[in-house]
Length: 346
Image 1 (cartoon, rainbow, N blue to C red):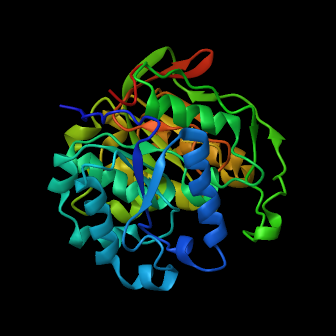
Image 2 (cartoon, helix red, strand yellow):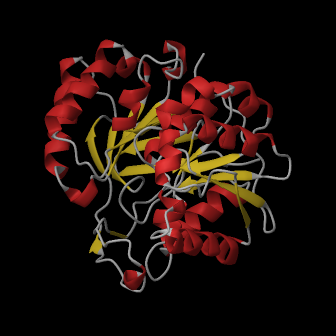
Image 3 (cartoon, rainbow, N blue to C red):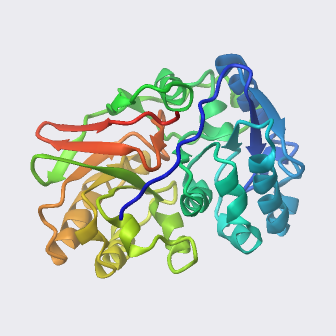
């Protein structure tokens, strides 16, 4: 049957979006509140959005950690509120999966709207997936919207194109530069620009020709937490999909990536999907090692012809694109390229 999702309506200048803390609650910690306010201001000034907080968005990291039900309540309330057009994650973390017992997925299904975030927000994206609603793997408030000095133009452009525009997204180039330099989130550093490196283009690790399919994926470490829960897609959902995967700032060892990918292999997922898009590794660490590991595992399962596009600009390195779940992606192997044939919103 494959993946078919309802796309939400576009955001517009004046739209209200809810800021939510679905995992780590640092947005509400006194020493980081400036960073949240900076990201909020950018959403308002750059995109013309009205940002509202849910009851527990700024409750602080200790409270947010101890109350997963309140986090779930915030997400459901944001979707249920007819005055709110979209939901933006403050930041990722490592325990959004704890929201699952408290979620009523039907609330998301009945109120399709933009959900934007990455990393541990992968869990919320798979909640939307179960609800049949398209969401968006993209920037968070504390990181990309509050980028030191100013947002990257590449990131701004993709937010505008994916969330505000009803035209097909078209070519998805790699970002011209990249950074994952760690600069402590201290207000005295807000005018310190992170070091940028010249980026390279896509690499096609294997495969030939052109393939298409709906986008499905996320942060590979978070997907490990979703496996064997009620959020994990049925076999048929993977049919014909383009799987996008990226690693986090934890920089997992290539051997761990191999363990995780073998699970996809034994599930038969590699034989169902049409291709893989892999994000640039954090700090570019293990860049070559990951390539070797990915190809090795695909060969183990007799999938050496499955197209794999490597070095995509989404996830934990900046600047980043926005990937709409369920939108039709096209991988071109020669020359290596990526296109999205649908609009993100309708």
